[in-house]
Length: 206
Image 1 (cartoon, rainbow, N blue to C red):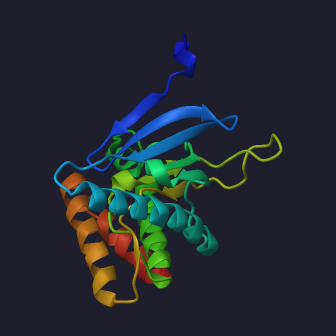
Image 2: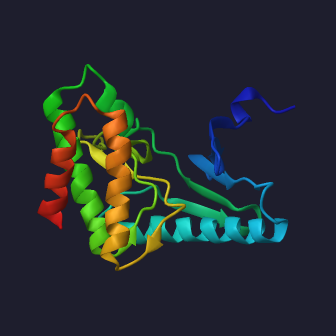
């Protein structure tokens, strides 16, 4: 009988996929599996889930080439529409920005960094497709060789590229930003200058 330690930990159950945390490959691993949709024809549903799984895995790899941090992909099971990827032990940007204990200066820095990251993606014709502060993690600087990291600023880790696409159309990049602005304004209305910092970062990097 498996022990509780070996059982997977459910991270989230969403409309598109389930996320589980397991100990695999000797590391804490996120197992993301796209769930079947009953309203779609089974054959079409299978094709869509496999395509989106493969696309997300490729995109997670691709964005790193341009300096955007994302979880490392360990493996893909196309038959099960499953991605095995690095578990990033970090809070979502949404929760950091909502944390009343966090200094406003740090929040503004994170907003500007978000704008720069999005500009980098768009500059390489990568459209995220689901930009929200819930799809960004805020990771503390890593230790190197047992020493504390010199870099004090926290690192943004972009996640959930399941709806991402390649496009050189300005309209698609604009839609990406408009969708983010809508969710940002609704979720972070208390940050009066937050969106302005996102725009500044975007224009600085763009």
